[in-house]
Amino acid sequence: MFTGLIREIATVKSYQNNTLAISSKYKPKLGDSIAINGVCLSVTKLLGDGFELELSDETRAVIDESKLSGKVHIEPAMKMGDRFEGHIVQGHVDCVGVIEKIVTNENSSDFIIKVDANTIKHIVPKGSITIDGISLTVNDVGHDSFRLTIIPITLRDTLIGGYKKGVKVNIETDMFARYIDHILTHKNKSKTMSWNEIDTIQMSY
Image (tube, rainbow, N blue to C red; front, side, top):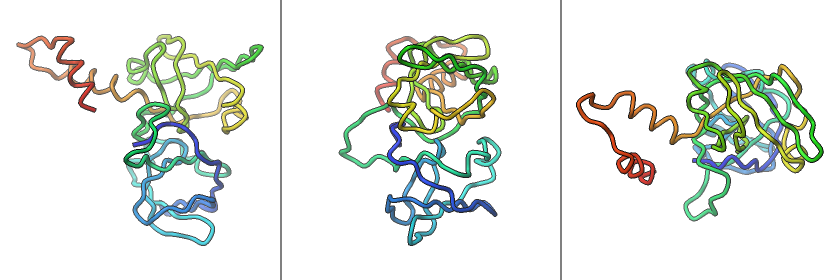
């Protein structure tokens, strides 16, 4: 589990044969989970200046592989007892979105991001979303896109400050929105689920 708060901007050393080598100040242990641009991966080898991780074919089919080069966001998995910030992030990418428009405001920037129809239903106004591993808040939702307002510190301290129109991003929607949609879609047709039951399910995670 992650929070969507970026802990370091690391550098990709190489990416070939499903193996990703990262140069980083962070020193993990073998088997540790680390989110790379929002993708949860396991450390398979320790290097003198970083570590290696392995990507499954299923992961490679969902994410934007172009993001596995140059600079990347990294976040180690939460430890028991850590302060909980950001929001609940699993590191499971739902889809790849595309930045359609960027509007610079006086003290922020609005990003309009387009996604597929299966994903937009899990994006909620004022809800949480993860973009390339960054925990952000959704402002508005349209039929195939949504708007984020990003403040200066996020633009300065993450890679998103250098993104342009047309850039692809890894997107993870809010976990609770996905779970509730799945439950309501597949629930027993003879029984209507109450909001109390939904609240109980949410509180169990």
